[in-house]
Image (tube, rainbow, N blue to C red; front, side, top):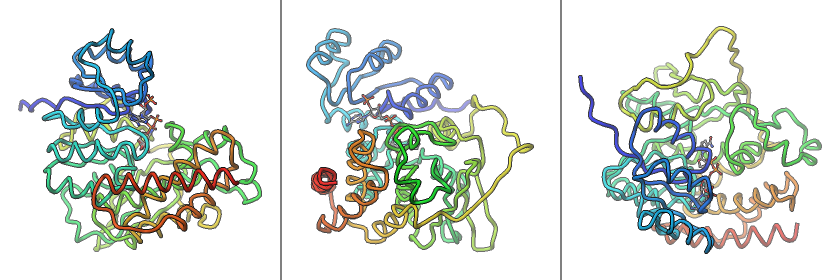
Length: 384
Ligand SMILES: NC(=O)c1ccc[n+]([C@@H]2O[C@H](COP(=O)([O-])OP(=O)(O)OC[C@H]3O[C@@H](n4cnc5c(N)ncnc54)[C@H](OP(=O)(O)O)[C@@H]3O)[C@@H](O)[C@H]2O)c1
């Protein structure tokens, strides 16, 4: 039977890890690309603008020279400034893949949902920092929110055809990161290169460091809460170093459904674009023979950001936005060599204590907390 064509894609964060993998999936599926956006007017983005010659191109923070070059190259196809993200996200009838890193992706997520589009969400900060605001946009705009994060895609796939009331637990798997099994003394001296050497996934710098501190898993717990509307007591984390089971759902009758596959982000991206259909993809068949699957408890003492994430999630309001902003600053400081690895958790915990709690009702509320928390965290980094 003939299937309707897939929606054209808007790829935000097109030059990043998620963006590049999304474009690989788009080429493979033959899906048209309506728009691309990134932070800088890099040669890489210019190359993509040539390849996808009908796409509008957004550049949120171009230099003067980049702006001039892009106008010469693209004329009116080029759009500039942070406002181009929500504008492109509202492209009628599009599937918007949000692969921007950081809270800068929030407004575009909200715009996509308000426009009634499908939002294929990789930008976890949208839900961590602005969960209630994104939820409001989804309900009132009528857009569709399909997770791209592999764990949430796994949960989403396990829940197809199920009723949420029959869920006992949502079980998020975690690789444990490069420092699984280390001691506190060993963690004190780890280098940026070691933190960047993720054992199973190849990703952008921030999420890679967040995976080493387990902050990423805490963000995913909060994301799970908002995506599936379940309480924090129903969300569990289990360390599974092979990253083959991407996550699992336990139902009230004791049955457990898990989603498995090679650790490759092209799979959840592909599914978010083709859902509810299954369309042939480029991945090799999965081999059970030779795979071993092991599981262990997370080390809550060695990785305090996991527990802190649960606390901030349970508190709600501005706490997760503060957590995210503080972590963004602390991770960048670690990458720049300004603070050691254990200081990331200290800066985040102190920022949470110092930024006053409030409720969040709009994107502007979230961005105001984000700005305040960044300033507090930057000060804490400077006195480390
Ligand atoms: N990578 C993964 O496997 C993975 C898995 C699950 C979830 N995620 C989530 O997906 C998001 C993207 O991660 P990533 O690993 O792809 O990051 P990344 O490789 O660092 O790429 C980030 C992308 O966002 C763009 N960008 C950054 N700031 C921006 C801004 N203010 N406005 C517009 N564009 C901006 C960058 O543009 P420039 O190149 O011009 O700077 C780049 O295209 C994150 O939220 C991450 O947590 C990633």
